[in-house]
Image (cartoon, rainbow, N blue to C red; front, side, top):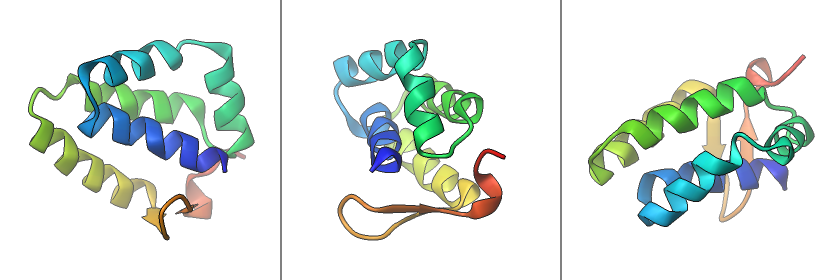
Length: 93
């Protein structure tokens, strides 16, 4: 479940409204972001870096393409509407 929250934040940054991007950027500086990442067994620093990178891309199409490349690089596979699998090597120790 928590991984789907993280994936939704990527999606909001890439294809959401400007207000969605702003909300996600604000969220990554809050303690609950770290809790969600920890619950999802993900490195909050790595996820925040990806989100910042995606939000800096101006074109929506370019953000969507970057999201696809990041998903592949992070080992994220979408397995249905809300289920996400991450390669074990990319999780926190």
